[in-house]
Length: 250
Image (cartoon, rainbow, N blue to C red; front, side, top):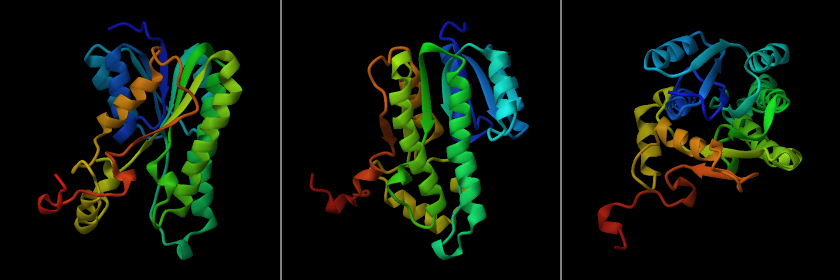
């Protein structure tokens, strides 16, 4: 493998969607730098390195600007940034605390801003930034803090696209729906069944589904798309759910 596509920074890379993105980009030939606050990110890197990928891993908290700045200096110049690191949680609105809100915004919104800003300062003209938002920016129950923080990511994406356009840096977001990650497994079987019934395509998304969308937006072939939010939710945002065969109009 070569690193002809340049260097790609991916946060939240130790598991789930982030791990899927790392695997996809590394397989395409990027030199991937995988970041996470979990030591498991090293296991991800070791596995891919054994398969021939060029990949490095770093343990850090994306809220720590000094640490992020030092990492960016080590791997500059940067070609691609994928801001995937995030926290979530389910709480009835009346039970939400300011701490829930602060953590969601500090990691999901401010952390995304810090990584994007430090990376952009070391990014080649023509680079690409992909922020992982969430379909829930359109609204979701019992997640007001998460919804608000991911809505901030959407707004940040659009503003960044404007400000970085003179350097031909394209900034977009991918908004996943329900994906088969650790978070899904925390749900009760009943809730999982309910979530599945709402999926227009009749299945839950996989990390590789999101990784493919990120790969498209991160590609140097993406020359004319910026400031957009690509919803990858299997049609869930259409609000139909999967009709039983006897109710299908076809």
